[in-house]
Length: 207
Image (cartoon, rainbow, N blue to C red; front, side):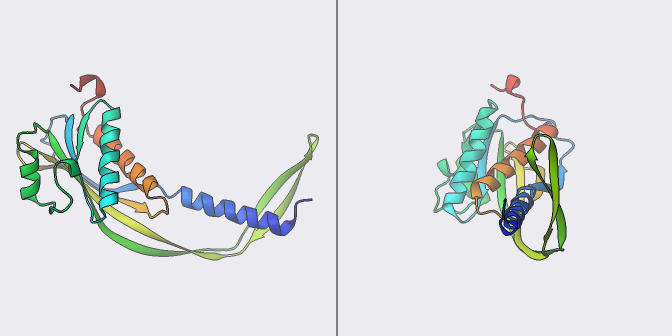
C-alpha cells in the first residue's frame, strides 16, 4: 500500500510544479502607431541588459526565431561591442549602410517581489486496485506562503528610416530558475503580437 505521508508529499510537489508552470509571460500594455503600414523582414535585435551572457542569449534566440520564419535578423552584439553603451548614437552608427528595416529593443523595467498565501485544501486521490473498480480517498494539504518575483519588460520596435517608435509592449513574467524558459516565453509573446499587428512580413513574402 502506498504510504499516506509519501502520497501527501507527492501531491504537494505536483501542485508546486503546476503552480510554477501556469505562470506564463503575458502582455500588460501594448501600443502601435496606427498610421504605420509597413511589414518588416530585416531586423536588428538588441537586448538592453547589463548581463552579457543574457544579452547574447536573448539576441541569439530572437534571431534564430526570426530566421525560422524566413525573416532576416541580426543580433545586436555582432554590430555593437559589449563595452559600448546602447545609446541612440551607437545604434545609428551600427545600422548605417546595413539596409535594416527596424530595430527591436527589449529591456528590463523592474522586478517586484510577491508573496501569496495558499489556504488549506483537500484533494481527491483516485487509485485503481484492478480494472473492475476505483478507490478514492481525500488527502488534506496545509496552507503555505508562496514567494516569487515578477519581471516587467519593455519591448520597442523602431523604424530605421525615420527613427520613430512604431510598436511597444510591456510584459510580465514570473522569474524562473531556468532563464532560457523566460527568454523563450518572451520571444514567443513578442512574435505573436507582432504577427497579430501585421508588422512582420509572412514567410512567403520575405526575401
